[in-house]
Length: 142
Image 1 (cartoon, rainbow, N blue to C red):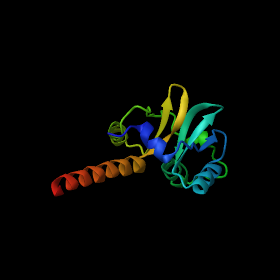
Image 2 (image 1 turned 180 degrees about the horizontal axis):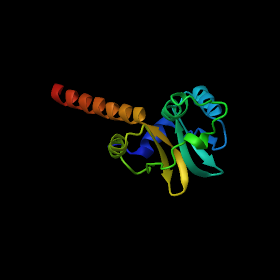
Image 3 (image 1 turned 90 degrees about the vertical axis):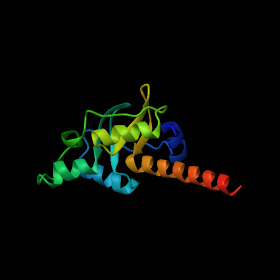
Image 4 (image 1 turned 30 degrees about the vertical axis):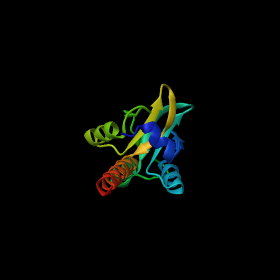
């Protein structure tokens, strides 16, 4: 069973963030530039929110608001679920599924270590399954 720390060690610990007073247009541009679906909203070194493409679609676009004038803090998620490095991929998958979220910032104490997406977790589980299948096939053949 892979841990979130192991997943981040492979994926990388890059953190993409934005300030709460930035515009939603700035956030969407930053997500596009970095090919990510979410940004951590930071106030100094403190995580205060999360903004995702889903927040944009549901709270700006569908409500007819303007991306250049709407602030990130108006639509960001503030009740943020987080993962810990020692948690397993399977534990985090269960949290994400139960709470219908696609991104979990990874926090160790007060330090932000990275972020994992549902896609990262699925890819990790698939890789583990492929490895197990290969080991079983090798065992059967020998």
